[in-house]
Length: 64
Image 1 (cartoon, rainbow, N blue to C red):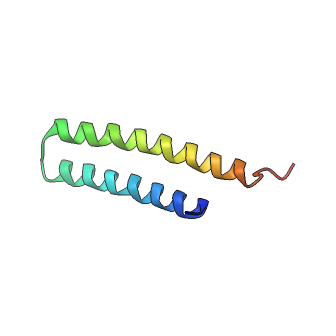
Image 2 (cartoon, rainbow, N blue to C red):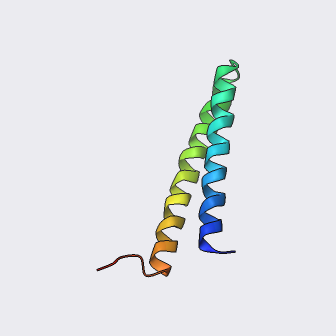
Image 3 (spheres, rainbow, N blue to C red):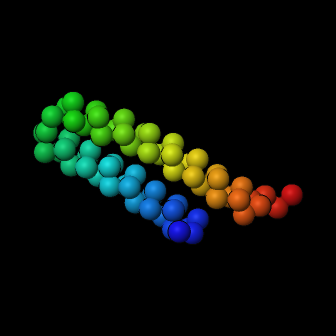
């Protein structure tokens, strides 16, 4: 799987968890579930950022 595909999948997963959390809050669902989803989103965002940085590093990222 290429770096671009990995970054795309990571972004889609983060967006999906974000939407699940928002839908749960808008429907008046369990506050504990919303909290768990938002914590998962933050963790997944961290993983996505690390992945993006790794792909940039692997490609020789900087133009300096």
